Image (cartoon, one colour):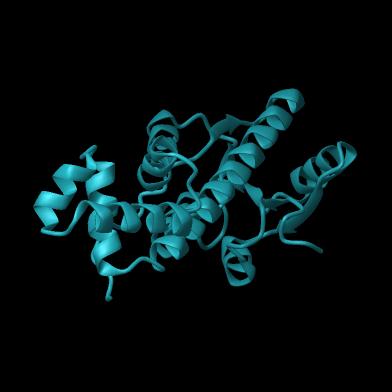
Length: 211
């Protein structure tokens, strides 16, 4: 199965609940994988797999919030989590939401609300993956620049005109124009606003590279 085809992971030790959730989620076309223990899920976790997690709060062994903490510590981009709980623990709900959970649902919950949350979580995961891919592509382009081109890029992003860049870097205007054209080509930008957006949106590291 492709890592881009979403999987809804259900991590819950309540077998009846798992069977009910699996039936409902599969009925709308999503693939489901279930785990009765948080550690079992952690052992098989693939951060490259598109999806989301339905996570019970209280389970034997590692709890749901403990699993969330482990995922957050080990991965900068763990899957979106929807917590499901048999107890309306407000302080806990606040804590896991602050740690990045999409929602905290108390059993019994409305099926439609759950499905809306799953769709929301999958959209979040898809968007995050697209942003990471764009950022990685921008970093790869940035790595192609020479040290001088990096200096010119920094000046362009700062809004400086060619004559100012020429004076600050002690190079001719013609050389600035040549570097500027090379930067635009290597970064794949068709205009200065597009170049600036590419750098700022993707948090390109503007550290000097080797010439």
